[in-house]
Amino acid sequence: MTEIRIVLVDDHPLYREGVKKAITSFPDLTIVGEAGNGHDGMDLIRNTHPDVAILDVNLPDENGLQVARRVGSEIPDTRIVLLTGYTDSEQPLHAFRAGAHAYCSKDIEHEQLAEIIRVVASGRWVYEGQIMDAKEKQAWLDEQMAGLKSESTSGDLFAPLTQRESEILNLVARGLTNKQIGYLLGISEQTVKNHLTSLLRKIGASDRTQAVVYALKHGWIRLPDGNETTEPSSLTTPKED
Image 1 (cartoon, rainbow, N blue to C red):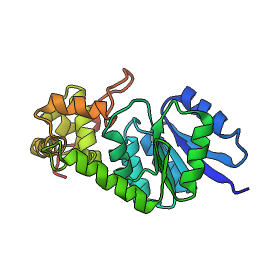
Image 2 (tube, rainbow, N blue to C red):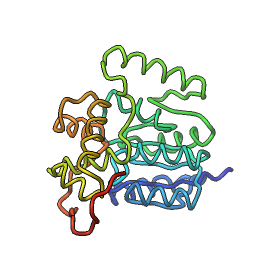
Image 3 (cartoon, one colour):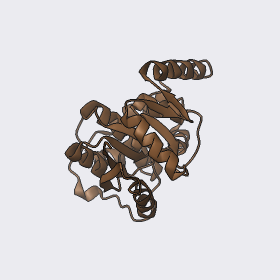
């Protein structure tokens, strides 16, 4: 029996513990590490090179889509299973374009999740019970993109936020002005405006509020949980990036 080594990244400890217990009940599946946010999860994947990484879409700091994209670039042998707590017609497309090999609901049965892990570890892709090889996955992507393009005027609709855009929109969601955001991130106010203009165009939003709502819906940013703080005094004089 071939052992499948797995990293689990989810910011809810109780859910993570439940998934861990379920997965380790199967003799061929082994958890080699777990993390509660995207940054730590990425470091863990770099250090352990697991066969499969299970990522929550809606993670603190870097979201699951961003981590998936980085894993695909840095550790392409690690296969990605993205879990989501909500349904959205566009999110699976974003997930597979970001490099995911499977996308499924967090309320999935344990036996189903175990089988999905085995399937992606074997080099295939899974979505809604459909098992695809590389050619079939690309055909599915092309079909989904063609359908959405016909409904949208935004040419960049399919690109998730960059890390910088995500940082800025998270701060917008916290009520900060462009000047405050620039100070916190160490960039100029004009650079903040440029990033906002780019991301508004990318997702087809008309203003900051609409952009925040759209990004929250898709799990690309998170509202503060009451324990997060923003401390301008810890940063240096703004500079261009």
